[in-house]
Length: 384
Image 1 (cartoon, rainbow, N blue to C red):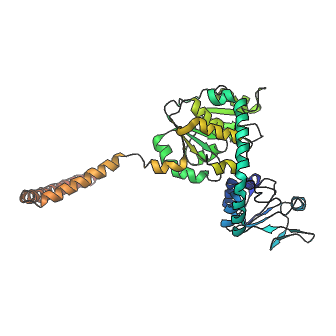
Image 2 (spheres, helix red, strand yellow):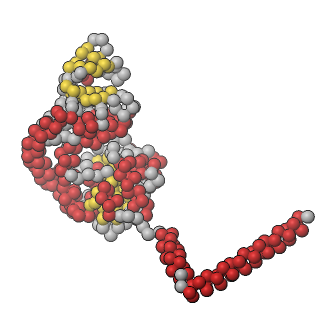
């Protein structure tokens, strides 16, 4: 039980009932709940407020998860981890003492509310524009000129950089670009927990970005030790943290309010990377509005800064079919040779060559057999 559904993902078990107070559930969190095997989601707040068409409720309903919302503040007051619950037609029975009435969210209901919510997009875009202007004023040096960003320990100029961000769809995206990462060997920058996922896939990031601003736990030391550089994000100037002191010279500090994934993209940009592949990074308008993040403006402006050099991992399999390996060429050569032999064998000259070839093959085989018999006899005489 948590107010934000995303805070539960790390401890969910298949068949759990999720209790939250989460207005406008986003797509990424909903996908995480489905992957974790949530049986039902009980929400004290509305799944869709009408400000914009949030994508999370649709993901849950389409996956067959029971969704009941608008259960009120009492839900979190009376439900505790492990509380016995019984669900019936939008009514939640908590033990024998409490009964809460909500609304069962259906596909037809979402169709209607999604259509109504689209009218709220204009207001959301106006807010996004205002916040972007404020972020640009506050972070102009970092965003436009790269000031405050440390030089990377690995040269990235004119190279491809892969920025990997943690999220519910990361495993699928890594599976799509694994061949590309291994064959093209781009410089890999991992953001937070994505470094652990990369290690599990057999890929070592050269740079790991760690966000210490909201109390997020850094990746394990074993993962950090594999990186050539660790970039630590902090809110402002001050004494080095215990984590920075422990990392020593391999740690670089960045003072910014930008999101961690945006800081990683800006690091690649400042290093003059030729191409940046975003793995787990999404940049559609619906994603922007659906994330509900305070740093949404930094995401928007960072994408504009990188421009056409930023490519989503979803596009890589469509643009990259794999490196041509030596055995590919060998197969083509053998196939061509066989076709040539077949064509020549149909001519009178080829027929003569075929007879000579068969005679030579028989002679060579007899020679090999005689040689093997001689060697076998010699070995037998030695052992005898």
